Length: 480
Image 1 (cartoon, rainbow, N blue to C red):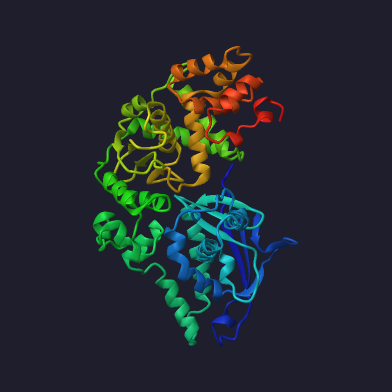
Image 2 (cartoon, rainbow, N blue to C red):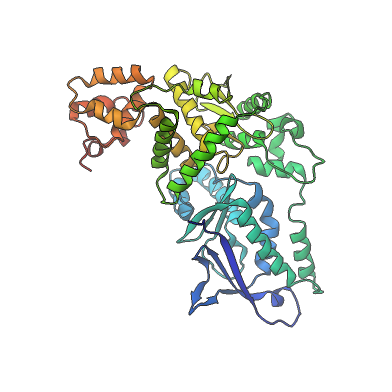
């Protein structure tokens, strides 16, 4: 099945040539595949939204660097579906103190102005139309439809739309027309400092704190390059900035900068096949966690590892020529950082002080988590780097977490082991030793197996998890 694309139709009205507003009246229809975002079909003819579209051109020109280089959703609200951004944001804001809520509301509003094209229109209320980058993909979403589309296709469509609007203004003598066309031509003509700040998600004045004043050297930016291009160091900083302090960010960037690039042909070939497997499953709109389980089962099969066998993530990575090293940062929320761009990696640096990665079972789970990213995210959602414990796309992390759990302890084996167990404590200890996994991971794999468990097993396993309020009896017993 072919992937949907972003497309538009615009039907211009005749104009007298008196100015920008008069020249750009027309009916615009925007679609993802066959689904309408703006406008609708009426008796097989375009029935687009009527407006003067110079507003949209000016907005695109002003916000283009943020559309191009600002990735992901703002830190704070847990946004899984773009269509719920406003609702999720309000729910999160309601939990904050009034002063903090007001400040964060301003920040979220500024993000919406940059990424909701409906905010471009002055004097007419349009449905939200989100354009938010996620690696080499872009979320495009209206109130009813959303899709994760290739970056090149989305921006090609938007550039063509901008060019069409700008074409209506060429030759007009009014000041607004001239300024709009000029701004559109110069939409990415910004200094490197601002481009770097946008890519990281900070204000330009805050770069000094992250780089000791030399952002170009710290992030390996060539000020003389014709075009700005984000790299591994910027990607890692972007994910770390909302989650930790500047000293930790500097340490992460410096450690990643010291990693050399290497060839990983065996991993690359396996990743190509894993991505094809993922694409087939994703087309059926499988939930992220289920995708993680499926990919892990596929990897075990590909490597010839039976469900009752223990895997060694570190050995797998060494065999693939992936560098595995250590990171020492004083933030136990950071489990690891990884990179796989043009200049550094593939490499995984595990934090010795991470909440989970400081012990052997947690380190194995951390490496398994990063294996998922290496296999299926380098070509799309995370093309440069990842900070495990940082601000990373929620669905991508859910998938990697499920993958790691299933790779280490197949949930079917965990569920079967506890069925009618007379001594669940002995079973838990046996599985932990056999698979080299934490007791919490085994508890969740048993819970997610769907096999059901008795009350004694439920109480034991619920006591192993850090979020017991999510470990529900009606689910664990198989009665949901």
